[in-house]
Image (cartoon, rainbow, N blue to C red; front, side):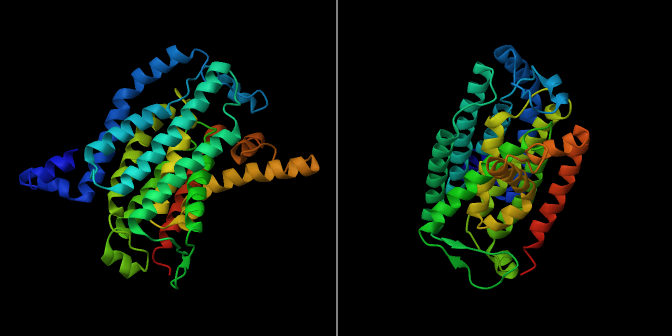
Length: 357
């Protein structure tokens, strides 16, 4: 909105600042942070009144989690409100990439909201059926992938640490891109099991991708680094900034002991958004490095289910893997902070791939 206003004013005077991505990205972080901090207390109070019993807690989980009964969920609504408001305020409204990302954000957020609503109203942790969720997630991700590819026309897969020709996937790229978006959305969803555990790694991943999309959007930097150049991808720095600001505001209330849970409303939306940002920047493989913590969390569940169904034995004491460490005697804050450290190291490793080619 402000970018459009600045354009109509021909970027005259103080409006010239809005021309610069760096300024708009910083302004978006500040805007989302302020909106989230102001909105938070009233929003949490409203959720408490509406939900009553709050987030259902699994009886077979760590016993320390039983004390969390009554904590309201669907805090992702607070994240999405501050995030989308700030993006619309500072984004370039002509950017198809930002609109494609927001389509995934709102679509995955709606699926997560329905899942959370089903859990709260039925006082059950089961929620919507997995098949229904996956069908609509792939539908939304597929549409977003089509919008992106239809704009830049590139269906190649770029490998990190390799400066040779990209792998041309052709029509299969749409399926691959949709899988990346859906898989990462659900990986973040599985990670969101402890106070603050998913929020900070999401912020760290967005900080890394803020740098990546800026470099990918610049022809000079992309040529120098040997990474794919995607004209207009730099506009996604505004979206990354919005997630960072909204995430920091939410973390203020989600820090142990949490006053509110993100719920599937937030975790699915944020994970899917990061996935579509990676697809736009053609850094899908690097996403697996930067978001390695989420990948490990998801794989721990897949491995646990696979081996239990075939052998009747568990590989981990409990899955996802953060609960395994709780069962080993690690305190919840210890698990959370150590996983934050791992996320930070993985983000640095992912950024290192930009130069090591």
